[in-house]
Image (tube, rainbow, N blue to C red; front, side, top):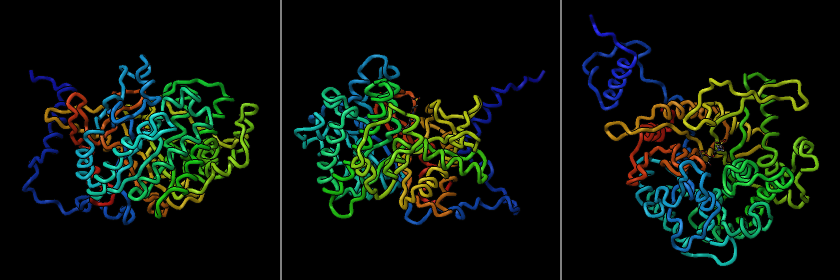
Length: 492
Ligand code: GBH
């Protein structure tokens, strides 16, 4: 009796063949290519990105640096939160993370190997002002001076974010963090200090990363630092204080920057994709994008809260002055949007005129359960920003995904799912740029695996695999893919 081939056997054989092929198998060598239309190489050259498109990668201070108590760094709310048992998966902390504080030169070489032209990093406020305000700590800023110099020496343009969630713990303890406008003013002060010292070399500054994440998760849902669940009135005021901090920072940057420095923000816009691309659904998705970003991007762009937001909040609406709204909507030089997943919207007969359609249970997602695969987000996100607010310079400041990366026998990670995700998303981004949507660059999240906030080290987003025991970095297959995209300036 011949042995029955089970599904598992079949998968093994198929898997072995796949690895063989990627290692340069010669199985098909010597065979004359058949001259059919299908045997022509894929026409990627017809799907190029604009000239001088800026390809980059991104990270954030608390997620990669480690060195939590070195050179005078004060504690941040993420030190406190991650050291509170039960808040982060496996009680992981960013004490060491990727040890990037000590290994930044090696990490710049990883960027160089990819061929990226730019790198987006964030500055840890508590390194520069250990108490959040008061006496600065020049040794803390020195790290960023060294990093910037190393990047420039390797031909990589630095883009710096001033706030990626590591609020000085002292401000949280003394004034309640973003619950108080003292924090908004302290942020502007810190911003001015850094701007004066870095903008001779750093020409692109982002104020704040993702209001839509750190305010909501940290002050309403309690699953990020500082872990609060504020009632609606206090919470809406916290949202307002955060965008006010952004506006004050824009003014501080304008006042202290060296010539040629530009300012923007990096927001995780709620991107509404029309469920079907018809005029009525597109109109509904556009309206939904304005409304669902009312507390952050919309007020920053328009200088007013939407009627629907204020009406829905009722007596819990934030208190604000006309002068504050003017500050919040200070003109920006560019807009950065972090895009991972869309919301699917359709037109309906409700008063608001749209419905967000929930995902069915079978909707595919990446390793993070929230990361539904919706490549159209990278088309509709920048397109909405350009059409709704007439923005002329847009950057995709984050896009990428988590995969259940496991090193194979040869030590490499064959993350075909990440490549699938990236190829589909980049195809949609190219669709946008080919229609003239003014996207100037793209920062892939992330250069390497890192501390994924409340998920600890369980979800990996890197192009480079990090062995946290040895701090070894190994390029994944997706690093080869991204390198090819950059080299061709086209989807590979
Ligand atoms: C970005 O946020 C962050 O800027 C970056 O630091 C992070 O590493 C990266 O994404 C990957 O996650 O589990 O229900 O709490 C992306 C927007 C908003 C997505 C919060 C995850 C948490 C969902 N994030 N969301 S939940």
